[in-house]
Length: 444
Image (cartoon, rainbow, N blue to C red):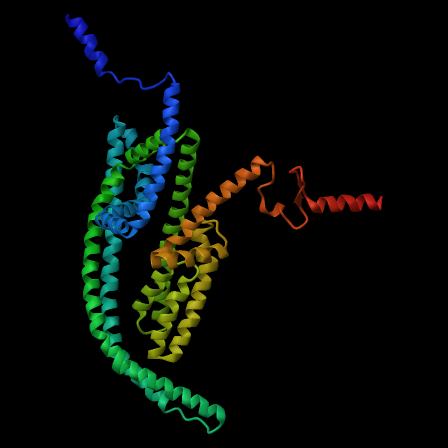
């Protein structure tokens, strides 16, 4: 065999072959139809056996989640730091391109600067929170542990020393007070002391789990660096896969929903974190001016729970008010008034300025999303339930609007007032305009 023939053969086998193109044969069509039936039956049997082994499958999935938790942390950290990296790229890449001939090198330098700056900001925030919060929280919790029993005893003695008249109402109130103090004393002597060992063991397990989460967070920071460096590659690979697996129409819909979800989640989470941080700082300043006890502890509780929409202010304010009332009832009342004013400021001025209408949900659907998410997934569900429900709401709205467009009906909700209707031929009729026209004809 000549060298030229060997070269042609190697070129033929090394080149990428073209798959398909002539269309399926009749035998192939029948085979595909039978394969479709087989896959449907196999999928039904697989679902049946999966339900039988649901607990085992759930444990396996939970184990996989526990192993991949650092990767998930890294993805979340990268998602939160991405706006900083993007902003640096927007400013720095054009400036470097004017001074460098190699665009890729300019992009690499800009990406390195953006990631380094974002990590510095993240480290500064975490370090500041640890330096400011941990010592103050330690002293607040220590003082609360030492002072709380004496405060409870003082409250019990005050309740026992209440003097009431001998009327029926006075006797009833006195009986209620005596039963309440007896119940509280029994709880302090029996239940509280009996559960101290259980709480201490749970505290030990909680500390170990917390240290494990810190390790996962540190690994997640390293993972986030790789994600931020290669985010364009991951985006293009995902986009390529979507177009390869789905039809162009379905792929475009999936990509559109992905961008919309990113817009909803990004606007809500980042805006809510900024809003809650500002509320926590304002709460600390206000409580310091009012000379409240447990200032930093209460401010942290109020700031963290403020992340929860709608119910967050009440979730943080109620236990904080009870804690302050144990020290001074009048200060507890002042605290409630202050929190009410602070939340009015947040709900009417600060929140709309930062968040705007990032979710597009009304107050009713926000409540439904929080109750559903909190009932299923606890605190994370209460926080993430609103943007998740907003995405589902947007998908449902898209489906409804597409059906209305197909039927040539208006998409605006205000068009469906009590006087409007759709006739039997499927035409939309605005009732108010018809009534006006008929009234004008009758007057003529």
